[in-house]
Length: 444
Ligand code: AMX
Image (cartoon, rainbow, N blue to C red; front, side):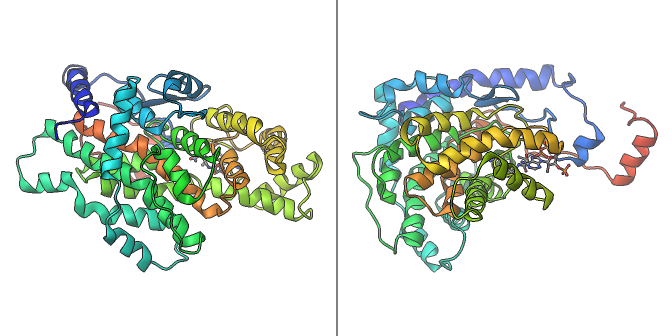
């Protein structure tokens, strides 16, 4: 079989782009674009401009843009790809757009769908590994393990090992591995879900369905959950390069580790409570609040007290705050609009809206966070709960399946543009103290 039109388009795009990166490195490489302060050095490298990606950009006020388009613009541009009778485009069409920057034709999106379908069979050894794990393992541990064990199938590792893989050709096996991984993620995630929470019963894939629709089908969900799945996967896909899951995937891939090693590592970062696990924690926090009131929706005054109790006990309010954003996350807004339309009377949804009215004021008064507004995770769990996906600890897996689209697109381009192994420089505390006393490090 010849290369797909997506792969051919990508080759053309990468080759056309490469001279821009080469020129910046060779001719303009020493031009200064940022400075680094001591608090950034100790404080998680916040805001230091030291990563490059053209796939998405996060503006602190406006939120994410995928290939220069906001979330509403993305949905509008892809609306020809909405599944019949549905409100959301196929994930296949979105991935084509994310990877190339072009809106695909119907034939091009169909080709991605056919390609993923042809790669979707999950090897038996992956099932065996999952089944050998203790059933109470966190589903993120299971997902990351399943991804990692497929490393034996890596085309990148194989071709690198055979020798002679040229730097400019490395994106090709990275693309192949990424496409295989993407194809297998929905059935693997659905397998974990059904094995862990649905009495070890399974629903086979339906070849007529798209990637998102098939995932909904395999976990046992009906309409309009298929649109929830598509929306979730798309809005969680990418959030530029500096967040933990994207950065980890990129960092590991920079050592020429393949897509399986890299994405498994990214998932492990996503599993942390300050990152993807927050969506599981939000629902726990909301339901604990309601439990204290015999499952009644609290009044605003009671809610305010819960928020303060959480803060005073030294915990963070999950789903609020962000390292970069300084306004309401448009991924929160996209979900809020969907919920307004499909589940306006859901008591948990009403509570989410009430938290939105109360929490920013409390967090502002508390005075610590730089951003008192909600992020994507403040909303995700409530929609899942409404449609009957009530196993909180699975929510980060949904995030992870969506995040694969962005981080894998990024590492394909990393190899296409020949980005270097990542290796920032560390310093000692003593050095920082000396430079602080001197009023700054002398730059040569
Ligand atoms: N509740 C209480 N305190 C908060 C807070 C919140 N939601 N968000 C930030 N703060 C605190 C921080 O803990 C920090 O306190 P410290 O000085 O005592 O350490 C202070 O405010 C300053 O933090 P910041 O600069 O505003 O944020 P950050 O870049 O250090 O951290 C984030 C960003 C997301 C980790 C933080 O806002 C947070 O912990 N939020 C709650 C968890 C959450 O929702 N995570 C999901 C984020 C989105 C995602 O990745 N999925």
